[in-house]
Length: 133
Image (cartoon, rainbow, N blue to C red; front, side, top):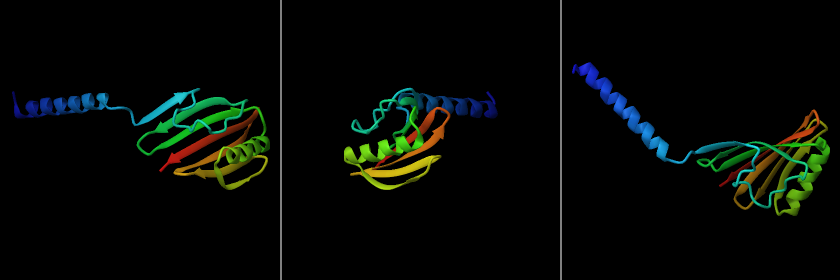
């Protein structure tokens, strides 16, 4: 075997070894559709008319994000979150918006998050982001 071919075989084996090691470790980022991630707190308020869209959980950075579609309008969705976040023990740190969209920032203990609400064709679209410190 030539030196060049030996080097290529060694490189191929190294790539294979890295790939096999990567297969045995849990995924750092998980993406799902239509499921509320287990990393969302059990008492986090979710409207009864919510349709769960995409969710992303990044275990490495302790960040979760989930999308909801709501049949209610932006203002009604914002009122729901403002009332129910406080009712569930969260602190609303800021809230601002209008008929087109709202942004709400909240916290509780080591958890920080946001709710972003935007107008959609048949109601509103919501993205909930949560970080755990």
